[in-house]
Image 1 (cartoon, rainbow over the protein chains, first blue to last red):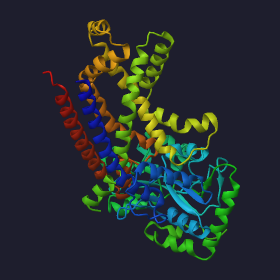
Image 2: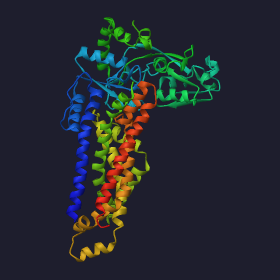
Image 3: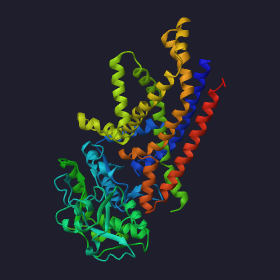
Image 4: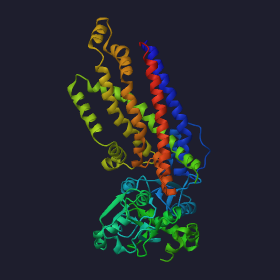
Length: 301
Length: 216
């Protein structure tokens, strides 16, 4: 009786786990493709033992000096996001990183990260840099930085039919922004302390996308947000939102490396400067003309 | 972006969810049996140590445990983390957390078997190991299927917690698609995926329960 039972249980477990392996093989391989190896290693979906093959590939990549692991928030269009059509990660910054890797003969690994943990990610070496609309202004001493490459401004987005017209109208209103974002830093800085003090409440949410849903639902009155993100939302939801004319802060984006990692920074900077000089950077920015990137790009040293 | 392509994108993360789900079950259940036995050990220090560990694992958020497992090696020992550690840390975190819960369920199952059976087995000349494997364990499995099913269903939904390590499972994808589309619809699609998955889990566990109740 015991043997029967054991046999039955074992069979059950094995059948289930085999089925699982089968299922996860194809799927996790494809997810890996899109996450990391897109364009780089377009191997046909391996039928082999998925988890192991995937792990081995990952090890090889991580230990390889020619691998360039870019950490980014995959919920941050137009700088880094999931392309609906292809299922690959793309965006202005990721396209730049891809071109840079092509020129240096590096393998690009696009590693989505949890934005709240970006410091731990970069310190522990799981990523080589953060290249994702990362604000340089105000964080100068926290990382080793490339030269700034994009002029960004932080604006207030409100509903199209809102009665808020100027920053002064924000008095007594509920404002939301992304947790750990540069907008939050700006609002909590001394320069904007007077403005922030007039809000009824300053709320934080891990995702800007949720912030915009909150506002549509009426839960908040305004969003402090990077202009590029606001414009992306406005394109996807025509006539729903409006940006207040007066920006609340001006700042610059740069590529962040682990503090002290100047070797890698210099290599990246060298190739980036070449790309800037021969117009490639501008060409990539043109792909994001709807998001105003050509105007925001820093073209001179 | 059509509903079909949303479903395709979200489904591409389903494999990772399945991987976490099955690997966690595979590791945490046997580990749970061992932990339950250790917890019931007559050797006090072992029993107390395991009680302490279970207490911490059940008393702190799983999300925090995942962070500790993932970044712990770097912050505690200065070990540089590799790319695949993201998956391994997720699996280790889930497995030890669920082992703690399973251990308590299994302990309840083991202790629910009348002592008389153990005594009878001793009289018949069974060794302790034989008594456990041939008499206690099979009955324990049968009795604990309903609470184990509860945990398994919770696990299906808990897999989404691996977003904290940015491991790309289904819910992470759903959020990314949601951001790319500036719409919440993909999150509801993910909800349907979880519901169907749990429906299947419930049916399978029900079948197993029926198959094992051959004395009734």
